[in-house]
Length: 566
Image 1 (tube, rainbow, N blue to C red):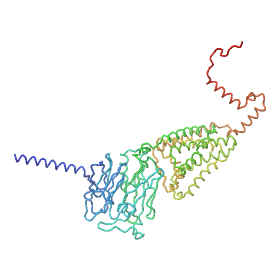
Image 2 (image 1 turned 30 degrees about the horizontal axis):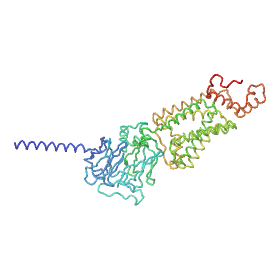
Image 3 (image 1 turned 180 degrees about the vertical axis):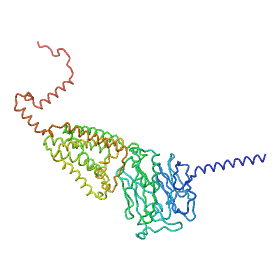
Image 4 (image 1 turned 30 degrees about the vertical axis):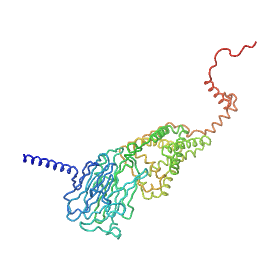
């Protein structure tokens, strides 16, 4: 009986021990240097990351963890201490190896209610490689290899800590700011890389797979596009134009040109929008007011694209609407704090007034050069925006606002000056190019396209002076090439149709006010003209009003209502 009891206790103890080992194995994540591992983090089950059998030539180990939009935390200890942990969607910790050390441990957790799918990787560097963030004086960590991303509607800003030269195990790091010779960190250079995710794709799997191509130095150079190279004398921040709803991954490669070595910071990503916002989140960026405005605007633009020169006054309304609406929106945005929907409604009203004013100016005065100047400047402004949308717009000389706006205005004025001898061709070109571009803006209100930034970058530059320092790079993918082909096809079709239809016709319609005045004089002097006997306008209006009142008057009952006179 006693033997059976002892056997039962042994079985229970072994089962409990196996359960503890199983739980421990679930909380423990074994990593290999240079290899990604995918896993899920739960709020109630923190995990421990372990890297074993680290080579002796490794002096620095950077462990990085990534998630899509829910924060995760990586720390050196189970208890979160200041200066020993990092929290965010793209975070990493740098571990300086001690002599004879072959094992490193990190602790991973999240405060999110739902499980967070994450990927992580440890990367190793030798004593010859630079130390990313080794001269950090701004952020909390002693060695901070992270890239900090801040964004708003206008620009996305990257901030990072300067790097230091590498050093061997068991030695002190080199001082950061004692000297500026070539034997110090001031010889290091920083290459900024940018990688765009597929357009209109917000899936978690695509992002996590792309992050795996942006972690190591060789992969970053093979997959991403280098934007600029900074020296140690430059500020450790850089700005890009925000592309809302478009996934972008950034990374920085720090190079030592003397030793021909390099190291990568922790890659960071952004969509320039919030996944958790109630209104205007990444999944529903387009507002109903924006869609309605640009859909109606595109319908008018399509009409102008194919029939603008024939319907000259409608085209003038369209051009006046664009000019007045653009400048009025800038004034509202810079001088007031009204909400976006109200601003858009006021812009539409002001644009309508501008269109009517230009129509009225043509009707009364008939000054063709003035009207064609407005038409030509609108086309010139669009072509100028297209020119500065190319890599030419990212040249350092255009960081100066004076140079930028002078170049913009010169290109805009050059277009009407070039076509001053053939005004009809200029007008048809303006109808085709500007009218068809409104379709691009309408498409962008439903689905992102890079071509909308042709004019959006100019608007951002006018609204915020600090936007001059931002790089205006946008993705060029299959969708953009399709929309570019649609834009070109509409423009060419509209121009060709109008040129063929207007062949043999007068270049422009006659002065409306002169025609009206001549017709009025003809009616006054020609008594045989039936229109001469028409009553004045005031009498005609009163007569028409009386007829309308008759429709609402009650019918009188039949029969005699007054007494007979005897």
